[in-house]
Image 1 (cartoon, helix red, strand yellow):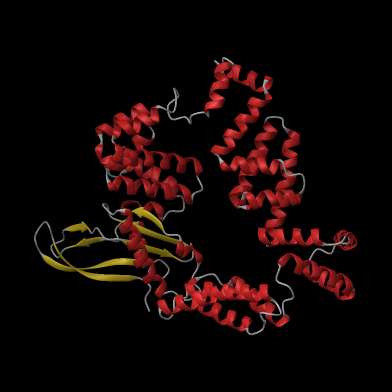
Image 2: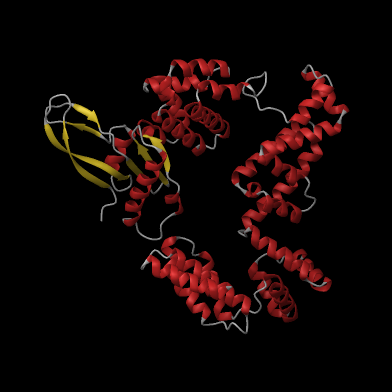
Length: 483
């Protein structure tokens, strides 16, 4: 069955009045129809020509799907509000998923929404560079005005531009800015994304409360327009110290360590990434670094690794060699953890299990690590030769999991159940949960029995098959059993 979707539309040419029927594409699968993908890149997917040769563009939505590049883009005409965006996206994505083979990839839940005129930009390998080039060349006046508004030297200048160009308060301008934000996010350009978001929020404020009121709030940020306002306690302290220049500020930081600490806290509160770095810098062991990562998951993301490396480079440039070396050690331990494939929850459970071990068993494990036992296969070979050590480890695992003894034939079922999270997986998950419940008795292992009932209830509540009311009624029954 074709993945791409079109509809026939009866049209009348506004120039000559000729009636004709045109094919309007609503879904384009780039892998299936490279010819249509090329029309999308050229910005002509919705171009129609009447029998007399008059060309025009249709204001229709388009969902663009590119499986090899994992792209899902919804291009919309002007004048579409947020609720309509949600409805259109839900309808078209649902139609797309119906025609795709299982299992469905995760990126189908992350639609990028752009104005129709920015679709060619979004389809390039470098959307931001393409956007700049198009702005400089031949985009409509609205985009040129947006560029001028965003690049203004001060909020006073921004207000003047907005007062002269009320079209910046239109739905089309808002949708265009949303597309620019998505383009910056796709390129991981945090600075551009932040600037675009700030200006979009400013325009939204002006739409709701008026231009003067919106910019009055901006002007209150301080003499240096647009800069974040310092927390009151720090601003008061700087005033008391008579800080008049950058040299005064540098001297005050050296003479008053408490001011530096307060400033660091304020910066961390404004940028969660810096709070994460602060927590990592205070970690004195790989275990403490993992605890910091559980509080700040950003630390074990690819973006987090890049940010830590940048911070380390900055510390070296400032001569803070010890800090750089310390963070480098903590970063290496986080990278090793990431490569292990464990989740943070699994790491936490392993730490709890280690704490539950008696000193003799803990020392035995450390000895195995020093001997190079660093893979599940090597550990399994050693445990076959040392059954007493295996028994102690399994007992510690049961104490930390709270689930008691798990029947051997139930373990592969639980492992597969834990991997089934998509809606399309729910029927299989229900089947496995029912099988698992036949292998455990409530009296023998109440915690495991209750946990399995809860998993079954969750799967029933999400089950896309069958009658919704029946599924929910059955889910409620199993929730009650779990409790």
